[in-house]
Image: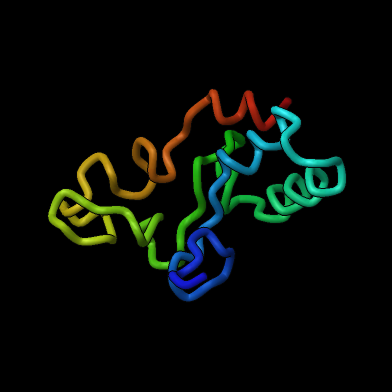
Length: 109
């Protein structure tokens, strides 16, 4: 044991939802039916936080406007807030909250 859990919805730190491993586990049949239903229900309940413009995002914001709060940004910080520190890693861009149509395709499976 030990260490902080990451991707726990609503946690004060690392409180984001990671879409890819969740919908991929459902799409690829890795989880049983009851867990698959729970995962997809959670995605549905996240609403605009995970699907602000129809396509599913790779992750929700951790609550501070920077998306992931555990990702190393180009300036060495762990919060790419869009003030020039984040570059392509700031929330809403590329892998941190950006849109990937392949994500939506796997979520639709």
